[in-house]
Image 1: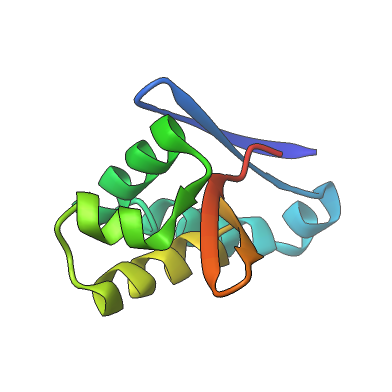
Image 2: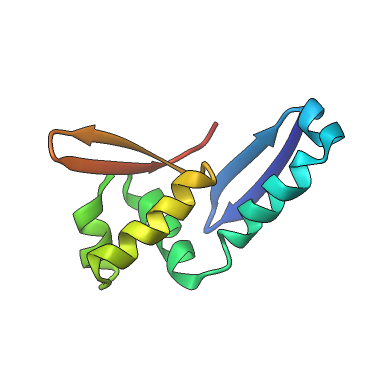
Length: 101
């Protein structure tokens, strides 16, 4: 198993892919996408905030980081798509945590 480990603000995020994906070349695209998802300062701030306060309500993310809700949602989608965060819905509220598996 290929493991990509990144340590941000002492919070570890692991990204794994199977060896079969590595042989097929999918890992390069997956790893590139993973790294690109960290290319924006707001996403790094979001990961830090989530890691220090998890689980975090989406409203507290955009209120604490002083950003508009649509912008926060767009960045959270990128983090979800790259399996950096997980979420749980409780009624109408969504709570985010770091994906540590």
